[in-house]
Length: 214
Image (cartoon, rainbow, N blue to C red):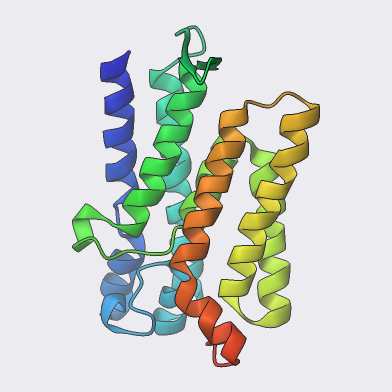
């Protein structure tokens, strides 16, 4: 089981490391997004530097790679694989494997080995993992992202609000419907990472100098 767990983490990290934004922008427009705009390889910077259509394509591929990482973890570590104990509480290997794969995919997206460890901010990868772990939370968060970003024209604000909204949804599900607490812990850790990755955006939002969409 330990070998399967390690394999899940490695595969998820490598999948997350595929820099679709960088690949697409270079192939379609000849632009290296790492040298333009925010310098990130995520969809928002692709949208600004290479166009909206390529940005949306990047969103789809980044979401897909992260969801794929969790799905692969689910296949490798099935529900009959038993449990481990953490803090005296039993945790299914399946749930732990899914969460480990999610974190590894987000880490790969942010620090991709295939792009000199210079990637995105983890938002699309996070939502991709949520779509695989619990789709309603991912859909709800993505809707908040779209509404907040379109109304404010600040993708950074929409991203933080959407990620936080998904976390807020997981809290009552964990308390009232006995969802695995490790899922809630994963969401909390991922949202904290997303906020840290957006530290410069938050500063500009406060100063009123944050870049706007379109």
